[in-house]
Length: 510
Image (tube, rainbow, N blue to C red):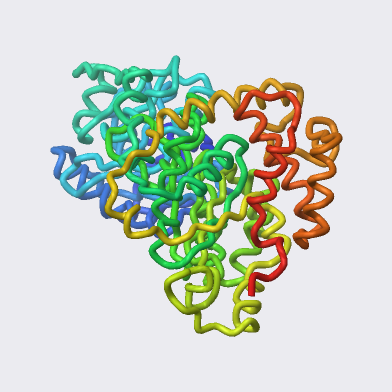
């Protein structure tokens, strides 16, 4: 007795179809799973056996062999529980085979026969659509994310009994439908806003410029000056996610099991803030079975690294590829996986080991050599990829006691969105999306400065001790400042403001 059930598995951020072949033969009662299963897949035999019995069906006391094809790709996770159980029942003629070759079936089983949620439902629904299947059967908690995919039926189920009744035509299960506009509206609110921030007008302006041009930003200031508070509000002023961006971001969170139950999409830009003790695999992704790291979970959002010099140097160095390419490639002996990682980097640090080098009210206890060693923990190549360095001074008492009166995030977001539209039009024929990603040729074409603006930039390079690498960064930032003002030409005022955002390239402050 042989039965075949279609299922799916995730490889990277995409999914592929898996044929679950079940053979029941005479012989001593055994249950073997082949096709490179991991431990979770091998353990499914006990869950499947208990679920079948507790759902009112008979489990065959025969030799059962389950093959997961293609057999040369490692299978992981518990999503094969449900298709395996359906295959065993189909091999006993308890399930009508008519729809088994038109539906992908996914789900983890509890011992009582109920269906538990899985990871990667959205990617699996996309794979089913690409294979021209009629639909997918998966846990009801994953139905909303899968229903984002158009032109495919999504059946959310609660138990093994319900799946059998659905396949036999004994029970009607209404396909899940998602109103994408409503899904965006329900989850598009951020819990924080720039109106909560007191003072720090200069830092808020720098963050607005960073958001408008997609520039990475480094906030430097003593403890308690508000660096983390400012960084957490950076996603609130970025342009709203498009549907394509939302699906791409949701895929990554779905395969990591971080998508809230019954939520269709992530409508807000992600904000990830890993601790400085994180490993390079945790940040960039990896492991024996590769998983996305924090840079991929920040896709289309913000990665915030607090206390930047405290991160291990080799951990920070792995950021260079995703900052440059917008993706992460993880090579293993059996396969090479690529994860998306187009994010904005926001980082924060103290100006010295004790933190008070720039605090006017507290004395710094660090020597110049200690400060130099502290700043040297961040490599030049990494600083090359951070366009804006901004000092965040401590707030004065009168600023702390005053009521917040700054602009709302929605007002700032509108200016950022207008500047981004200008950049989209400027780079419509290239793969560049914003000013921060301009290559040297584009900088020469779109960031031309003449007359007084050029003289100001040359003077700053000489008198302030700015490094050569700061030259292109200042031009990029100045171009963004001009875009915020909808100006075609870069003026001396734009250059002057851009120069202020390169504090680490200036001569030592002590």
